[in-house]
Image (tube, rainbow, N blue to C red; front, side):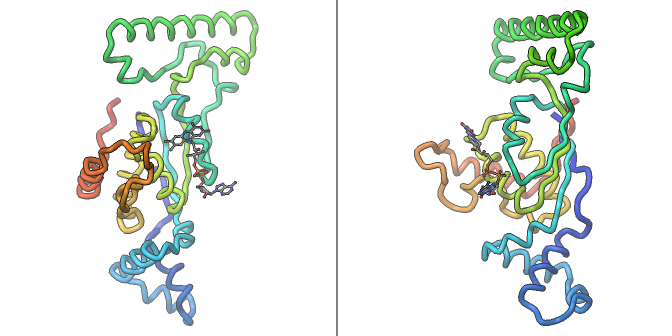
Length: 240
Ligand SMILES: Cc1cc2nc3c(=O)[nH]c(=O)nc-3n(C[C@H](O)[C@H](O)[C@H](O)COP(=O)(O)OP(=O)(O)OC[C@H]3O[C@@H](n4cnc5c(N)ncnc54)[C@H](O)[C@@H]3O)c2cc1C
């Protein structure tokens, strides 16, 4: 999996703090923007986060590239309706030379099952090529491509939606692959907007676990995991 923050609103924290200040101030924009120092911005962002005045976070937007993720992941990801996506098409892109795929660690850890998994992928790749050779259009041949097939996409979310996404998808109840993606995205944004993404992450960072009976039961461990991440948000090196 490769995740990279491609671009984001310049001076995102200053913009959000200015938006918040505007709501409570009688002065004009010029005066407002001169009032904004880094410390004041941080204080203002702390205040809106504490108050739940999260609308102002929507002014800051972040765009990521994600590659080497399964279609199983992207199907979950695109359920987030307030995000924008562009995803590599299986209609316009041919996979005549085979397709890359994700093998879940639980399968990779089982020698026999991993071999059968690889074999199934090989068969599907061969069938795809045969279908194309028989004149079947890519949009129909793709029906044999599995959930494991890799995809790449561009993801854009504003800071409010990102915080919501991190709350759901950094949680241990989320599926392992989308959780890994969410953590990498959080690491990326923490480096450029630490105030906006302070304490972003699973629901249990803000208090009791919101999952009730479905809780992973490891809230203390999860809090430690994210405390470590906030202390050192440098992303992991690209495994590729
Ligand atoms: C652990 C886990 C398990 C899941 N299991 C399943 C499953 O079994 N089956 C399944 O179908 N899905 C499942 N999902 C997906 C889930 O139901 C949501 O579709 C997905 O997480 C997107 O969340 P969202 O709607 O809050 O976010 P977004 O679409 O990103 O929206 C953000 C927020 O905006 C508001 N909003 C957005 N659109 C509307 C709207 N039309 N009307 C009112 N308010 C809106 C809501 O407050 C929403 O929370 C699962 C998700 C998780 C994290």
